[in-house]
Length: 178
Figure (cartoon, rainbow, N blue to C red):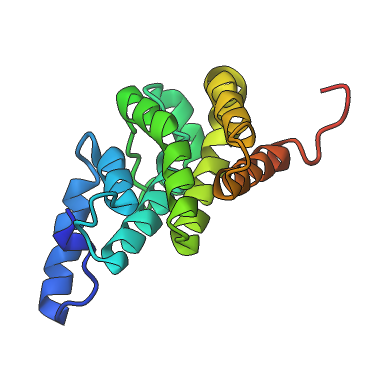
């Protein structure tokens, strides 16, 4: 998968990488693998590949997080069935992303990788929209509070502010009666 994310290739290789990447999207664990590549804790991948993985993860989550096993529900979410392919992210993959994306943001803040933080923030924004009230509230708030209780670690406090900003945007236009 990391090879497909390399944008510094020839035109022929780029086309074959795109075709292979399209096949990878259909496999389980695609999103968790992208998250691991973009975090790149072991420095296995180049910064360009890590950033491309973050961008692809954001695009994948923005397009597919809304889909579930309920096919009737999925059809109501698609505007043009001929153009949009429904890819259902498995519940296990969604749980993995929810359990690890906040730590990935904290790591990206700690390593001062603003471009990856920006992409992961967009992922978080979409996940919050669908999962905050039903699944993710307690874990999200606990991670947020742990950032603020970090004994003056400025990078963790900044990460907490980033996370707080995302959840505050979720309720930005809510009224009190909701």
